[in-house]
Length: 489
Image (cartoon, rainbow, N blue to C red; front, side, top):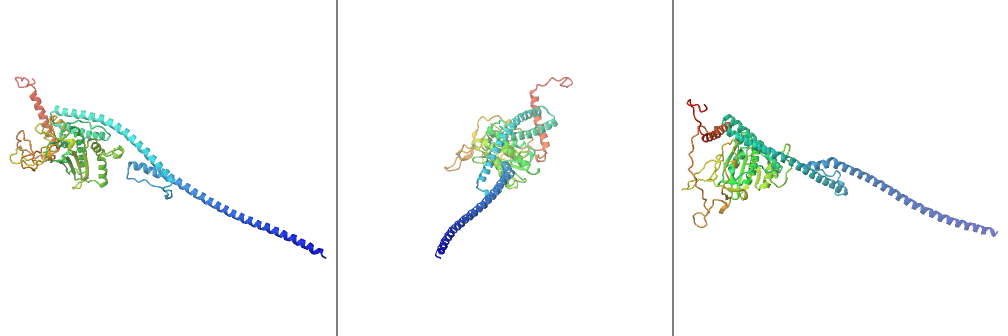
């Protein structure tokens, strides 16, 4: 009876031990399960993050591809257009998330390299085009000068007024072609192509006017106090500039409206003021014209429009090379006012009128009336007659033996002197006495204003041919006459 409880005790002990072992195993399994569940959740989260990262990477890759396509299809064409037309904007990034990123820096670097490459290529092509035009215009300009000389010789050779009229018309057309070729050559860096001697500013303006169609509309008023002249090296550049500004004024105003030119003299130089009554210019057009004529930057042919307008650009080239100034603004009359300022030092001088008289084609200066006891009479209006193919100022006079500087005397005036008077008085002007008494005004058979340009041209040609014929007849010995009175018998 006593052995059964012991066996049961042993069985219970064994069962307890097995239960403990089983509980330990179950606890261990539970821990492993929990650990596996945690690792599984972490793996799932990592997988979800990987999926999200792949999605974002795919979206960024697609956005980058879109930016590259936007760069090639929009930004680069905008850039190439903006290099020719600065007012055209260049579009930015398509996606703002790329701002100030590596992608943004890389795309900006691409644009900078393309801009530099295009600019260098444009400069190279433009330089080649300018060199070609420069050579062509130089050759054509030389041929036109030879044609001009031949036409002038023919004008002296033939006495028929109708032939002279046709020759003057051909010479005038040749002068207009020469002006266009000359301006184009100057824009391309060519020399103006003509050497002059010191020339009166008033004569220079008249010569510039005679190069233009519609010259009869130009009214010149000479307000210069002294016989101011432009030094030889700047005569043709100033004449080209005046011509181009006058051409612009005549072209943009009605054919029945005048264009007024006023010559003014200051303490430091002289000015040519051109006013028209035309359509005027907008603020951006004036700004563009001033940029071309400032002479501060090089001008490319592609910036002159299609077809190229070389007038303002030629003026800018000459301004940079010779040192005078050009200013354009809206005119009080509704059109455009252009002012050419020529500094007295070193571009102006004063000539001696007694040794180098001014051409009769130049406008009469508006000088003040002479004081009591002076032999210089007062002069009237300074509006010049309409010239027809007027000779150039350089061909009118021989070089002046002596000139005086533009502003050498006290007070900024070449003729200013000490003058009599108490100490502190302003210097008085000394005027040259005329070499001969002025001829009285002869009566006219008809008013000049009533003549047409064709009648004026005919009279000028007849006068020129008559003078040449008279000189030639006076130089020839008289042939012996036959008894019948026929000198050719």
